[in-house]
Image (cartoon, rainbow, N blue to C red; front, side, top):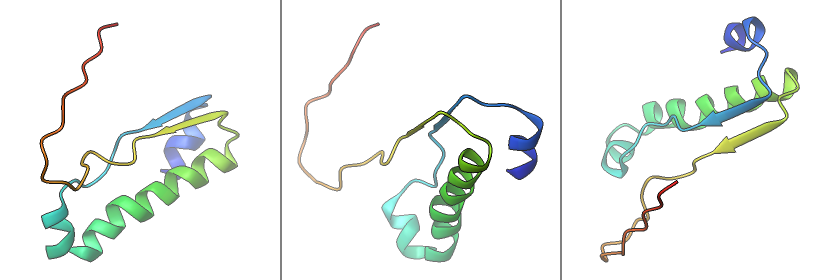
Length: 76
């Protein structure tokens, strides 16, 4: 990650990367923490030390509920 930030000059970073799945997190908590917590910390540090102006972070792909929710679709 440090090499990526060193080689490129980013004004903005969009983080959509993560290990998904609640079941996987329960079965492999250390791997899940490495991917999601440590990975995100590395992105934060890269942004901080390289003067990235904006960071967009997708925090979750699931709501943790068993209820059906209406789908929101947007057309650009």
